[in-house]
Image (tube, rainbow, N blue to C red):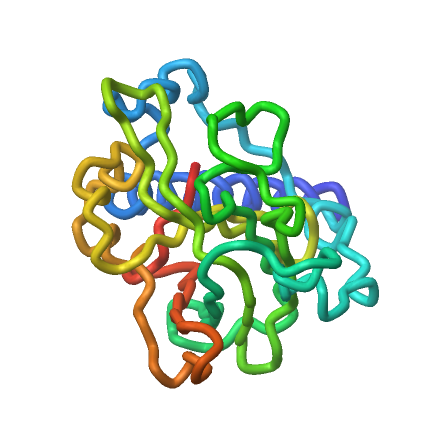
Length: 251
């Protein structure tokens, strides 16, 4: 009886996994950018060439390893306070909520960001763009969502930068977002853009999203309620994890 029940459970799990993959593929084709986007040249070298493989989710995949949340402090979410001096550039506040498909908050989600500095250069040895590095800005931060799914970062508005995707190619100003669920294996990655950026219509990564409404959901909103007088402009960027209004994620 136990073996029969185990076989039934395994069969049910496999059916659910297949259903999940098919649902994800249908959703991805409508909302998320395809793995192979011809306009974004390097996807030809990076996207998977074989079908998805079903990997059973055991307790270890669902619950761990988890991030030690107790190690977070104020400097993790304030990118202007991670070094002795003030970073160069325009201070901005980026805040928002992480929500499910029904608009319910997702608390205790680890949100990480990374970005270029005000001159459009990353603090990374691979980035050799001839723009100055800022010794007082590393460009990375992290925080946890509260009980209402809210997060907040104080940072510097990133600059645009050239890339070699095509002739005279420039990436619009953007901030990368990474969200972790209950473990490191439940990770989603997306990008946030700024309203009114003239480079958005020319960016192959932004335009790889087939749904115009999906592209709009990657553009933050300027918000006077988040703006702090005489200190920093404020932007809001809500992230929806599932459903028809989900935020487009990198595959």
